[in-house]
Image 1 (cartoon, rainbow, N blue to C red):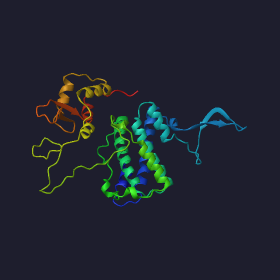
Image 2 (cartoon, helix red, strand yellow; image 1 turned 60 degrees about the horizontal axis):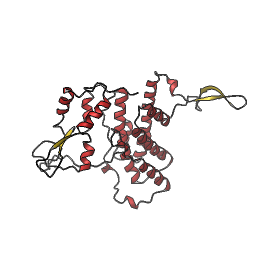
Image 3 (cartoon, rainbow, N blue to C red; image 1 turned 90 degrees about the vertical axis):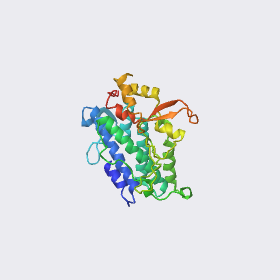
Image 4 (cartoon, helix red, strand yellow; image 1 turned 120 degrees about the vertical axis):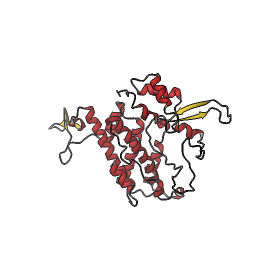
Length: 312
């Protein structure tokens, strides 16, 4: 996966999207196979594809043998097969599976066709950013691997061709088909989950070292420029109120109780905009009651104090 990111982020690499999709799909398949081995007591033959033995008369018998490639190596289960099985075992979120399906379709198109439209670059940026986010979370949940030491991000869209006149581009049939398919995968199902099918890249602020730069940030600094989030932006960033936070904690942790430990931990996060924000119920009324809202980042803190439930 790191190789995929490094290739994509090269300043001038003409085949970046196609190469990223090929390497990223390969990375997911290896991660799935590692999990499948873990579930099957590290028995390598659990990865092999079997077929019914062929009798002398040409019919298939009941006894099964390992299916071999032309070089006599065993065929192994495909990425799609393992994704389906892991989803059935509730070890893989359906949103992650959809994202990988999109990435695989991009990979297949990259292998068999030449994609030249900026729309293709844009969709890979969105789907690729989501797959990196999902990969980090899944690796942490499955193997307790912390990938924070690596720069898991894709180059900003500013390095891609300008897309101002994208609507005027004449797409070939294959490009139209894959873009139509990718657009059909976008779903609201991911709203309440930590995973994503695609990620819209929307750059709001930039950091500047110039002396006359405006101080813009989420902070309690009284001198900072005030930024008003729209209602939808606020809900997306802080989707949990007190009751929803308790419900999700009970679903997530085996030893969770609404006692002083929880209240003290929750209150310690209230003044940090990364985790919480207080909002007036009536914005135009200066005397309006206020309510605390929480982002899902709070679980990164709670995970260190509670035991997560084992997945069945």
